[in-house]
Length: 341
Image (cartoon, rainbow, N blue to C red; front, top):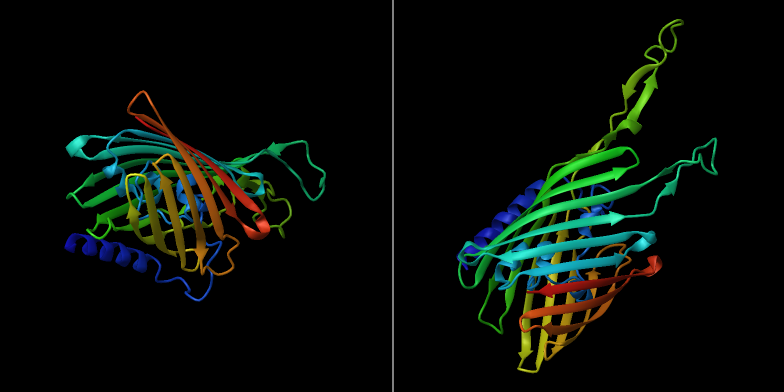
């Protein structure tokens, strides 16, 4: 317990220090880059309202709490597809591999993509005949280990890229997660610091312009090459603290309840709550509420279901679905395929 609270204190101190200069009485939305890193992964977790930091017991722990992969006894593969808002598509693929006493490793890739869009200008509002694309990508390498039979810690190093037309931004980030299992109905306490890393700044050929150094002087060169300098923006740093437990569990039934508290650098604080009911660990039903108490949020109720089937003895295939209400932005639907070998 002393180790757990020491690590939680250190994570909180790091986050508070990095966030100390931000104004506290505003929503702070729109002050960070790479916001796609805040899109939740996995239909199971999102069906529970995103309250998954304290559970993190499948391959989606690569996103929610990397310490959780240390508790996975078998290799897992997770594939996620999300029909995101504004006709965007969000995809995630991850794999975890236990290494026995050495711990566990994982690799994951995240992408946010959209269809090509027409280039429009003031002179040609109907289009110039050109098209441009925009998208985001993250590649992460993770490691976690059980320090005791009840306490695990994990780390993820992440490379981040954003691009729009001919401009690109690059960044690197670190995630740190811990999980402690108590003796009270298997209650789990999780803490995560996400996206602690470098600032990102757009650069590319689109920023190359002609400049007249002295427009009041006749005869000088008015077509000197120059670069527009864009601002750099921090990553969406987030500290999360979660609790999860099974108030009822038998051979046929399991009920899991969970709650997460979130303190992001680019928004107000909020709470995620959720529950999961499993029958024979084959049919699963979930419900929750995402971003409770967050100012000006459009998110809210989430529901989901899942089905698990075993093949060839040890292989297990899980298919999960989640629906999330986004208010005026309508809704998002997530489908996840998870395979355990």
